[in-house]
Amino acid sequence: MFSENPIKRRHSRRIMVGGVAVGGDAPVSVQSMTNTETTDVAATVAQIQALENAGADIVRVSIPTLDAAEAFGKIKQQVAVPLVTDIHFDYKIALRVAELGADCLRINPGNIGREDRVRAVVDAARDRGIPIRIGVNAGSLEKELQKKYGEPTPEALVESALRHIEMLDKLDFRDFKVSVKASDVFMAVSAYRQLATQIEQPLHLGITEAGGFRSGAVKSAIGLGMLLAEGIGDTIRVSLAADPVEEVRVGFDILKALHIRSKGINLIACPSCSRQEFDVIATVNALEQRIEDIKEPLDVAVIGCCVNGPGEARAAQIGLAGGSPNLLYINGKPDHKLGNEHLVDEIERVIRAELQRRREQGDTAPDKKVFPIKQTG
Image 1 (tube, rainbow, N blue to C red):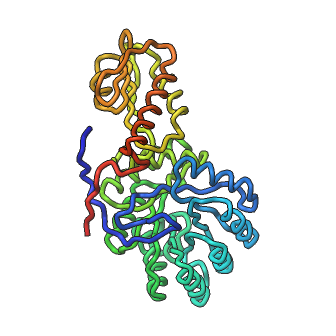
Image 2 (cartoon, one colour):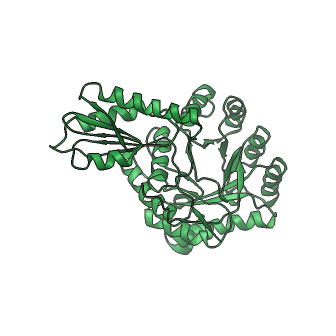
Image 3 (cartoon, rainbow, N blue to C red):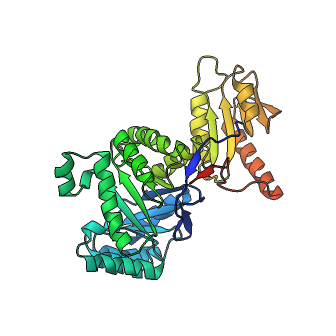
């Protein structure tokens, strides 16, 4: 496999969101957000646990009311993954969730209100070691910035972020991260590029309101991929009008494609053609569902014919090359031949056996960095 990662990662200040480091040399973390009613404690806990099982490092929960804040306290007691509380306008909600164990407060100081209220929230965060996330969105820019720029622009997003940052700076609070999201890929990318040169804090990347599963995944992959390939970004959220679990899966797929993180199976598969010796699409779809629970990194190739099949299969840790019969490779060497019956069962068996062998020998670990990424000042 190609063994060089050209990404030189932007140096940023390290903060802690619960037990998850964000920034510095910490792995780029993957987030999602619940879409249940927060006051429905059971449903929210179930969704958070599903996100955690999918690999989410951090989960955000919207807290629109004090009732939701009280529900959050019950939710926090039942889950292990760090929780970011999403709060707007009412500083009392921020104070309450800080008491109840929030791992991060997502606020915009500018919409909290008077300076004494902002100070109260910052003091609560400081006293409990809770970081803050400033979240700027093109759809909710301050009225004076809308008037100044006429429409959302990258410069307007950055100016909004710097206004909020200035409030925290005056209170000598440094443990925060920032997002400058837009639904337009180029607007978001430009804003993040500008902001990355002006602050030392970690950046939370996202293309907001990206769309449904397919279109949103494409827009997110392009926008986040552009930034991550430049070394910009410390934590990501893929925003999809879909099951939040899919946000986590797409997020890790983006990181895997860039060789930044390697959680789970990296499945290499051909698009299939008339040369295929077995139904590639059906095999891959079934296999993906079978191996969703696996967190350890492993390259698996499923190629339908003998043209590219042997080369791809040899390069992967587990590889199937189509033929008459098909040939399965393990760690670069031909291992055994397979008919078309029970292909998925056999590939899954070999994958799990290989991972078990690695566990016993101590030569595998879940979600390690594929290649080292250089830090730049």
